[in-house]
Length: 251
Image (cartoon, rainbow, N blue to C red; front, side):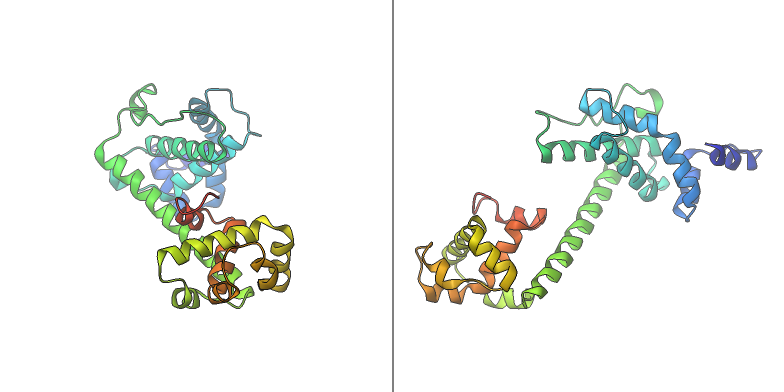
């Protein structure tokens, strides 16, 4: 609180807005960022509470999600879009908390009210430019997460002496063959013995696996690399890669 006050007083003739303070934060003022995050905790709690419909404590996971979202909103805020940083961050916080709630199945029928009409001037209806700004921010965030996930998966594949190039070259060419390979991968992860062998030895126990599936040893060997890759996706923290499998197999 003190640092923010001193920062504002130092300008004397011109009171700095949160939008102007954000510029200094984006230029690397970590101390000022920490002070703003501390000062705006009540705002974060209130915003998160409006989604969760209950009082929010700082120890709650939802508050942590909201705090991170507010932090991201400050760093990503673009004043040229016309939205106030409060309006922008309010939407970001609500959407991030809703995503968290939906993924964890904590509440039913959670939705976001873009109009945000009960906070006065700062929370008036968002303009098209403001909504576009939010959408662009979220698309970029999702792209970054997808990129990080792919890099993480690529590193794990290397431990099994596999690469994306090999998977592209050797993955089943026909849909039925791919579905069969995914089914085999599901058998792998559902058997502790086979899965432990895969993780420890970095290869499939083909003889044991052959007894649990209705395909030939030759088929398993031909699709071995693809089966291993799918098995790693099924047991790993790969949200976007797992989405690719939805609709093809219950996971």
